[in-house]
Image (tube, rainbow over all chains, first blue to last red; front, top):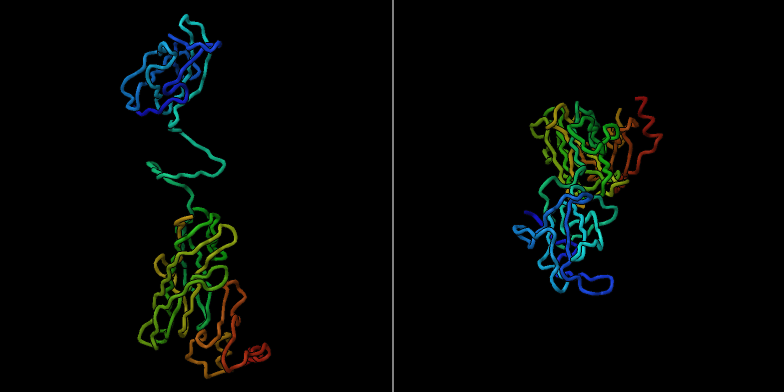
Length: 266
Length: 59
């Protein structure tokens, strides 16, 4: 039995009459909230031994044992004197550690200890993955935004397939990855580069290698970085350079030229 | 003729060079407006004028 200490008369509570006399032999009845259906309480945190119902106060008007309540259950308490005259009624009470079915907090929450989650964690963390659906012709030696235009997924609709940018609406640190298959006329490529652009300027870059016109038709350049995005105006894009005759960024499937990312922390 | 080709025509010595290694960045925002000179900080070669580049359209 999962129980929590009652906030009402939980431990060592002493009751008095209106005249300040200890409520010796007083009675504490416990019901399900809003009803007259008896609801059990327990003498300890083990939740294994039930209190009597009513609980009979001792000669000093104190509860004889602690009062522990079943978690996730709301109670009604009624206090009477030893002659069954009602002194008070208290409804919709829960234990101090009651498990809530739902909790909505309008402000901040500070947790000094650990947080254990047995269900799903925070929802709606932005994540996206998209790719270039067809070859994109570019000009050699010209840094060009990759027209990533086909989504695999986009959990928060934060990737725009017309501007080719990811602009999340939740602030935080994001893992951003991209790959470009730079190709063109065989044996003419000297280099290719791939960049993550943040807010229109190069943020991180990488080279697919320098080939000195080696006998290849293309190369894959990949880039990966953690990027902080403010959740409002910040955005990232995939850019590249292909120094080659007849250069293109190769498209057509999810694994050639692609761009993806996901929220990792606040 | 692409912007790159025009520049190579004006400055043949840049052929086979990585532009950005020489202080030059040509850029294309993929917005339909085409290539443009984003940075020109070459140590010796002056930035081509619009007239020089436009003149090559007729060749």
